[in-house]
Image (cartoon, rainbow, N blue to C red):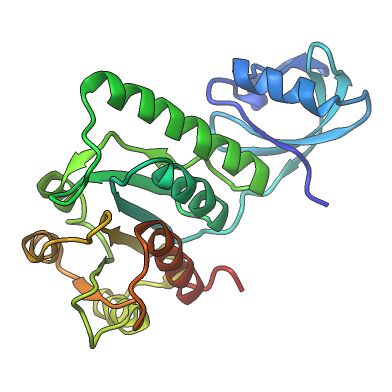
Length: 258
């Protein structure tokens, strides 16, 4: 059974001089620790501000003071998979970000598309971003991810496309594409860039309800050297379904989820 995991964005455990010391947990993590009702002697996993991995024994559950039991090796190198998700109605994006974090997606970019029904003003954007950050942090802790995914502010399609310039592969999910699937496009991109799967940087683009327009697909394809539009099969998938299927397939093809 995996240990409960906590992330410390500001504390470097290698700099702690005392054998027993308090963890500098964020306020929401303090609440989470109380809900878990830890007892003295229980062990937790900790990822500190330098992305070092430790196993710690809890000495005082109330103060969350611990002693280090072991300095774990960093996880093996993993591909960096990023999801560009078209803004959608309701809590669809919330659920995509939650479950895609569990799969191992490393970054999320909400995209304001021509067919996006949701319109966010600055105040709503700030609230939504804070919510997304809380969701991916919770999902990363729950699923034992080695990092908390980065969530960007919502981007226009043109700005989002510019972010793909250095990708190993940019794969645009589009219902009008009939011939090229994810496996073929990803394989060709890896070969063309002579990149090992573990070192790959892959962006996946999923439109909102109604999908991406042809002009939007073209913007992404023109922005990156190894960009292709791809099909996810014969079925027309909902945006929240495509937002999970695409990264699951990509991570599988890159050697993850096996």
